[in-house]
Image (tube, rainbow, N blue to C red):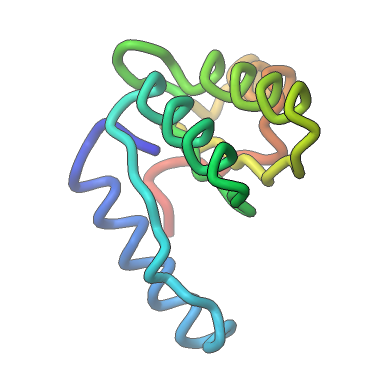
Length: 118
């Protein structure tokens, strides 16, 4: 989930390279994207309503309409309320200061990747 199309495409390309090399059986055909936090929450709710689940969500921390911190909290609450399986949510952020790392973790994200990614 990211609001910048070039970031989304960059992450998609990195995932393709990584999976080709390390996880060749991993299916990248089922990658969803959302341009803001509100769409991310709606997309997760829709997928879970269909009886499916996400295993991994890459979440930009600074998005329009709803930031990644709030989106993560709402996603976690919805899945908990529905009794679903929680995905791993990894923050993608350009902020590397400790306060942003702690904010990501305290919002319910499992880990953090600093942008730009290598």
